[in-house]
Image (cartoon, rainbow, N blue to C red; front, top):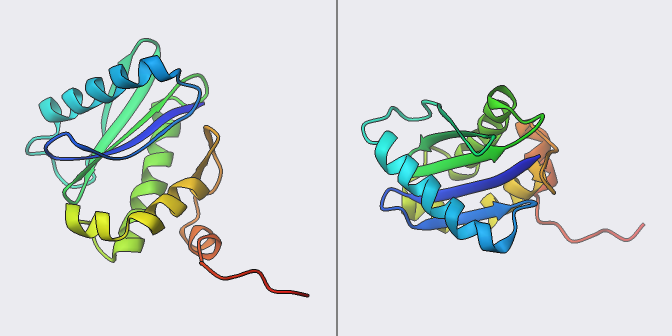
Length: 147
């Protein structure tokens, strides 16, 4: 299961978070742990260079996408390799929505569409869609058409 998808700025402020199967009382621990992990290891990191860690029998893959830090936490079948596929799909969708690797401002300007993409890629803790074109098609904001 994918336990968490979290975006933060370089100062450690959370921009988007999605937790799946993580009790509310543990979420603060995960937020602070991931932000500390990123602050120690992402300084000077290349854009989209993947970093891997493990903590309490879960795997963590994290990277920088433009000026934004992205963390994906998984357990069981979502090991480092599977999480790398998830992080690739998410970074690809974010760059597609923003048109380039995002600054924090651009990321926040596109917040709604990024949330829609995230919900299409990871649904209830499972990897749902990885194809960029399919995600783009699914997030189109069109009203339902009467048959």
